[in-house]
Length: 380
Image (cartoon, rainbow, N blue to C red; front, side, top):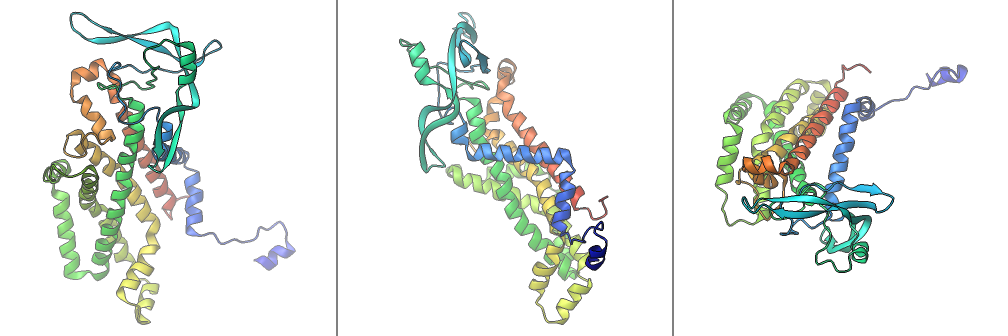
């Protein structure tokens, strides 16, 4: 072909494209999946740099502004980037607090402003934050002010916690549970499913019946039962890893069946028989030759399993059986939504749901895009 191309320059040179290159090209044509992938990258970057991006620390309280409504940033020639100061009012009969905007008082905002000192990733001392109240400018315009200016982009909860900051800090736990849980699921599913499909016989039958028994249990009650047996005096870190392991122990069955089905179809291929004839061990044949042959399908299956892990942690934490305050996660934040009356009056308490839905949808779209891209019979 290359020799013919020398005599006919218009003919393109033949290039060998790997399976991963073809998958990448097909995935790039799936616009919804690509957008979802970019959104996931953005969410994980915000989680990694939560201390820098969040306007306040996760545990910062302002008891003078409980249930403060969202303060949307404004831009004007007179005040630049700012928000209106909110004045708290208390109903003398119901004692319900409400807020009104003071149109004559603006709180200046700025990029890379100084805030409360913190340590990025617990290592690097810093004071600058991506967006927040410009306290230096506020002190110049309000020299006798008794309180500091506030900026709650998504509102505040009953303790005056900034919801945006807590969402960013909580994303570290809620997003990492899916990844760490998938790591355990990957090991269990690959090992048990691979052995089941490769060995076959009675062992395969026993493993498949065990998988059917595990799948027959209703997930939510089983999650609740396993989470309820955790000791109450455990630290937040131990509970975090315990929940991750619980979710993994119940989520490996789907991957195991996918691996088992693929191994059954590949173990009699010529290259597998040739490996056995030259004396290769069963472990080498399984993990070195058979499993890498459908790695793309494994990645797709894992990607579609991550949303279940995230929803599992959110459900357990929401019910008070998973992570508990002062740990911050999206599920822990939703505990404030158990009071329907509070949600009706303060709807911004439900904003963590928006991030949960967005994350789950993005993972599903990415999984669908990878599944279509990894299909060898799909249109080129």
